[in-house]
Length: 305
Image 1 (cartoon, one colour):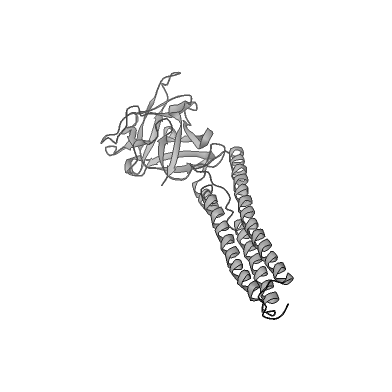
Image 2 (image 1 turned 60 degrees about the horizontal axis):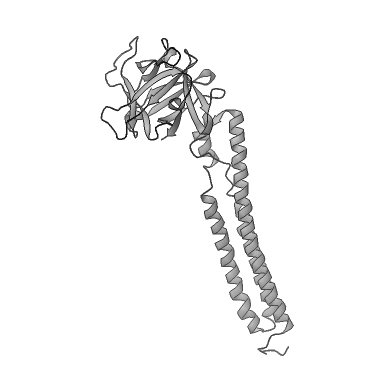
């Protein structure tokens, strides 16, 4: 080919083919890599859920998976590496020959494949974001262990599964000292504020006491001494140190739910009936009780805050 000639040579055709193939390969690497990364996230989530079930761990509402951020960086790196290699190859081959047609095709195409690779990566990243889960440190903070594992620690609102948006409420402002029969009012509230927030205090052997955050040293109390089969017992609060009637075992349920079981009354569970409670009420509403067995009204979801 004569220097400066504008017509295409075999070298130009080869260079152009290399750019096209390199660009397609770069885009495919980005697409396939992100697809694999998304599939890996799904596999890790399934493995986490299996592990959680075996270990007796209750996950938050959105189960967490091991983060794969570093692993997901390789598609972009591979795409950029291919793009860089193609650009270097074109520079070495085309600049000395002054094949301006080849240069006019090569460098814009290199920019296009760089952009395409980046867009492909960002597409995969945004797609994964809808499937991603909390990072492991957050999981470690929020995970809730069942009766077979460690006790729960932290602050939570206790939401009814049967009545979404309705929370356990404790009014203990008049409870100023210990009372043999307990005192105060425990019922339900639509939405949660200070009176619907509780601190789970861990005890040995995976046990918990549940303390009001708004009213310190006031504990959830369950009296199941007179609960017949199918009947209901009393739930109120107690002042001071948590005694045996204020100690519970959190039992895992399907779909990340829990049941709260009395320790001194082993077959008695906390229940909530929020029928008709559609709006927040100054004094709360519905009823909170305890009964033998776990049904829909005895299942809860813990909401950390």
